[in-house]
Image 1: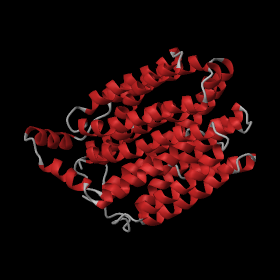
Image 2: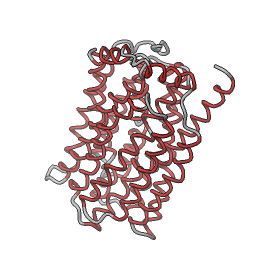
Image 3: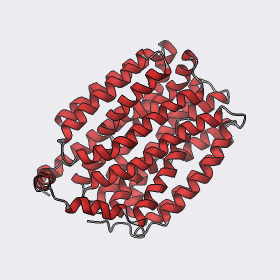
Image 4: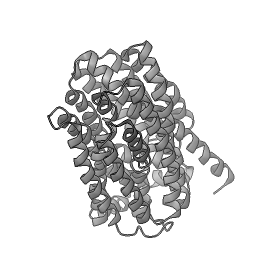
Amino acid sequence: MDKSKNNYKYIIAVSSFILMAVAFSIVNSVNTILTAPVINERNFSIGEFSLLFTITAITVAICSPLVGTLLNKVNIKIIMSISSILAGGGYMLYGFANNILSFYLIGIIVSIGMCGLTTIPISTMISDWFEPEKKGSIMGIVFAGIGTGTFFWMQIVSRFLEVYNYRLAYLFLGAIVIIVSLPISLFIAKRPDDVVYKLKDSNNKNNKSKDKSFKDISKTPSFWTFSIGLLLMGISFAGIKQHVQPYLSVLGYSISFSANIGSTLAVSGLIANIIGGILFDKFKTKIVLYFIGTISCISIIFLILAGNPIFAYLFTIFYGLTMCMSSIWPAYGVTRLFSNENYSVIFGFVNMFFTIGTSVGPFLSGVIADTSFGYQASWVIYFFTTIIAYFLFVRLPGLSSAVDLPK
């Protein structure tokens, strides 16, 4: 690797961190603190508004394979620039929505933008620019931007809502997304020249061997075990994460307490992403999965007992330490289990399963919360769902080695 490429890859990493800290954090994490104000002012039910998270997740699931394929055919700058406008501009439109249907339609626009702006293109660039033995650590650092951004934005938005209404919050945050993400997309985002030339050559020759390679991979037990595990993990992860603040509100906690919980969760997640990436690079993957899986189950038990503030904070710390799985594992798992050829295509498809899970979880939580069983019944379901997901992951072949990644 020449010196200029070696230096530029770190610019890619820093820019990716910023995108996750701003665009991703605002749309996917901070958005939860706006749920209660919107529901209260618009008189939506919890289940009705939770359907928004389901619709956005389904949109990402549908778009993920398409974005993964387009990244091999269209300049990444074009994809990310258009996506920046859709994500930020769409988020601003939330401030003008007056009915639940408007929220649903705008959510589709925002989700399309986020799909082409953050996880898939960022993971693809990291896979392109960095050596196999560094990918876990770099992904951990980049995705730690989620926790970093969430920590600050939770505090900023909670104070913003004490003075202004949720409509202005949407306008302000959407503008920030565009201002930060569009310049990065236009002037910084890029794939290495050798990768671009290889892709152009393959497209010009209409190379069918790579398509066949993906078809072969999609028929393997590892592909489906991994994908189903991601589906179940997505259900439990999103079903819990998107409803932490509403659950705390039901328990009688104040907005400031919920914001503090959100910020603590963000810090825990930040630390977890950095440490998690290092662990995946340095230790046997199965050992890391056993460790994180155990912490995940303990965190859900604390969530059930969160009527006591001590257990609420214990949940936050333990659950935050597992958040590296949702951010790192889908992308890193692809590099561990499959060939790096057609990475964006393979990742786009497996990410579809994860996002389908994230579309089911929030809606399921909202529906159960509106029944006499309440949120606790949801947490019990996710406890067992989590156990099954990690059981599938640890059964995946080829995870014993720490660093022998596919070439």
